[in-house]
Length: 521
Image 1 (cartoon, one colour):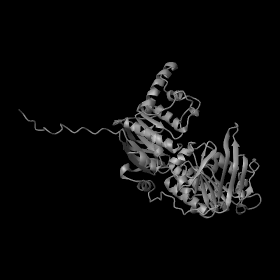
Image 2 (cartoon, helix red, strand yellow):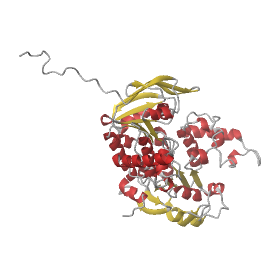
Image 3 (tube, rainbow, N blue to C red):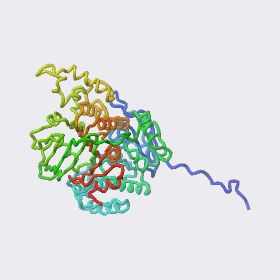
Image 4 (cartoon, rainbow, N blue to C red):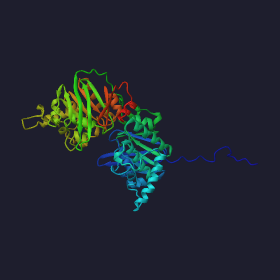
């Protein structure tokens, strides 16, 4: 009997499996702006990999290169260990990459089935393609727990179900790698929990998921690995279990960041805003506000929670003087005219400041300079007038320089066009303009939408400082963390109604999530 020398040992170590995606030395510039600088990253097959970073860190540019929207100036993409050219999105799809965008790419009056096969019909004989696609769609929905009726019209589906359609579109095109961009921004907490279950199911089936999000809680809950970008560079990739929110926030910003809102208990005073039976119908006669009643006192923040599209925007528009309505609204005991005769300028004169939900559409003129934007709505103030017909532009510019310093607007250049500031600094310009007038009531919608962690911390401090100065604040946000940490009371809206009011100290996300879905316990 002959005994082999290597008995009891493996013949050879198995080579490690190549990563699902590897980016090597990716760089991309837009003129003088270096969006991505020599970025390298490996994403393991069958994992959920998070990518986080401040606004302008380069996350979206990097994913746009991977999905074929942009071409890198230099660098290499490897899929499954093989160098792969991705000149366009069709090449990305052929390489097994699918992407679910923050704003869904669905045809609203098409059915689920029609949306799924759109662009992948497979020939001129559409009837046969539809039959094959229906069965494939049903199989995918069953395998990945993406229960959606193929014959449902997309516009009739909830936002959560529309997101499932987007995922099914990618899987129908045989995607093994799925990129999701801020996927929970428009979901209720139960819908977000369901999405996470779906993503875990995709991972268990061997799919690879890349999650772009600014929500550190979600990163900690769902990802295996997280990469952090700052100013166009990759600064760290760590196992999620070996880090925490504070460390990730510091890596993103480059300094320690306070993730919680520090505020003392509110001491509410006299009623500032009293709303009774507020009702609004849109141009098609659809009721968008259905008998809203609420009140806010001096020195308190009332948070309005709810999924976008449930009447919060219309509530802000009526109170801000942009829309007509019926019902009763009193400010400091005085009735407001809701017939449309009083506009936004009148509201400002009455003591209402308004930070709109969409800063670019409603809060700024993007081609105008920062100093011009900093005076909009208040340009007729006496301190800005040279005479009855001429504005004192020097006074406005000097005032803007002061605001930029106090509100930490970067760069502090008043002549720079609004479009050349980052989203967070655009928001600071609007916040400075509205808060600096010391309004009795501040309406503030989505105060930190698209804003990075450093700017979030600053804006939250300003809101609390206004409350502590004895002002009333009506806060609308789809971010439950923000609502719960800033608010002294929380009202939840669904389908144009207030479903209930909660104390932030005694409620939780599940309770609020049920109200946001229209369920009253």
